[in-house]
Amino acid sequence: MLVCPHCQFGNPDDHKFCQRCGTSLTEITCQECGAMVDFEVEQCHKCGAETAIEWRAILTPKLADWPAASPDFLDAQQRYLLQTPLPTPLTGEVEITVRDFQPFQASLIELLELDPIEAEPQLVAVATQAIPAIAQPYIEVQSQSPALPQIHDAIEQAEFTTVILQDRSQFPPLSEVWSSDEVLPLQMLHWMHEMVELWGILQPIGFAQSLLKLDNLRVDEDQLLSLQRLHADETGRSA
Ligand SMILES: [Zn+2]
Ligand SMILES: [Zn+2]
Image (tube, rainbow, N blue to C red):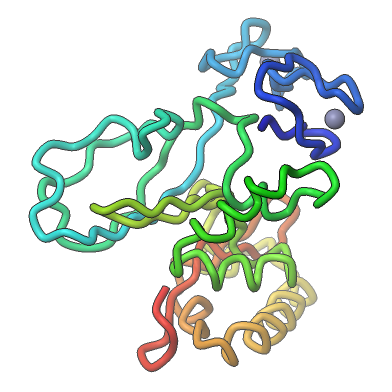
């Protein structure tokens, strides 16, 4: 099922345009110049800007000697291409950038969020069962504040489990922005207020660590606080 990037309608796999609003399901809009660009190319044909769609994957190995050689793709459908090879073997959790080669294809998380009238019930049932435990806290918190990490997909395999998040690694760290000369005291107060609010969401479910790891606190282009990912508290649930 292809999810329309404009109206989120679920379309059959062979459709080139959204059945409800007519938006293209093969092209994306260049963020720099507004040109329509085939999603399989890396650069806008008009302005040369990067148009590849990337996500941040957090991968946790389940087997001791995996992988013998780094795979190219995270998944059997060859959707998420690893942008850097995995260490062999992988001895612990790793964060890695992946490129999306099927950006309109409904992810597990999108299947859950589809209007039940459009979604094929058996697909939703499969998605609900396939969501790995590692993804649950992300699904639980993401609607509560845009500052919290936004999950896009999750994959559970015999060898590893992974969550695929919006990539915020390019946003500057809050610690850097905080210490620059241009920051107004009012802005600092606002960030502190946001952190208190986020603490109220994360602490009760055992993920307050997410606010205590300095590198995890980022600032987006609108000067809003953005957390890259969740970190579990020692005594809390594991992420
Ligand atoms: Zn649409
Ligand atoms: Zn462009």
